[in-house]
Image (cartoon, rainbow, N blue to C red; front, side):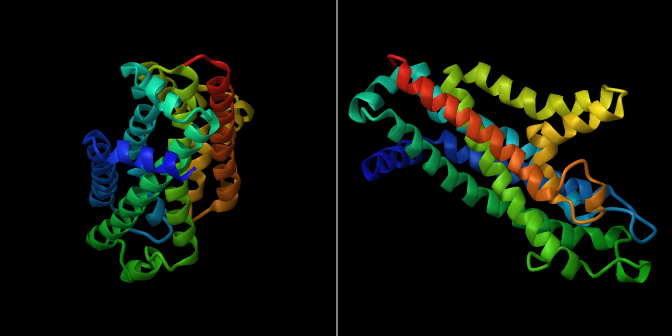
Length: 261
């Protein structure tokens, strides 16, 4: 396993695209969160979830995580390098596991920076938009602190969510073996399912889609207020996203072993 991990890490650090995608993810996540917190205004207490608002950038940053994860393996299929990879490491399950472990590490590290940066931006910007103790809001130094219980769960959950989206994308790309198609499939599942749930008039089906969608369910972990009104609980929702990732990786691993290349 160690040689496979070393090989995957060498591939990632010797090309520039992974670094730029990770930096872009951090920038997009923090920028969207900062933009959201810079325009919102609230005149009364209890009018919004400040932590979830600060972390809204995860919804955009995940798109760059998807692209990175897909390119980790589909890029090799596109260039034909996958033949060299599998010739050097015949145990294909080990190859996929090494890619998954390496991807998990770099996405978790970048995700941590993005999430902490988003929370810091919220603490700096929200006081200028009526989110102050004089208007009945809790101190931002407490409610947006990573040491606050609900905020800690939202922060850790967001990092785990980005990691699971990366693994889900890796699994899909292993099955499809085409970069453009894999990116389209994953982004479609992430962004179209929430839109579809809003277009459906039946509350039962609407709630069901919100409970099974990889993004709508997974990002429930960001909620720190009115948790009981959510279609699915925070950790249960993240478990749904984990289920999508596990299913995709299992399918990808089986097909990787069955195919010639």
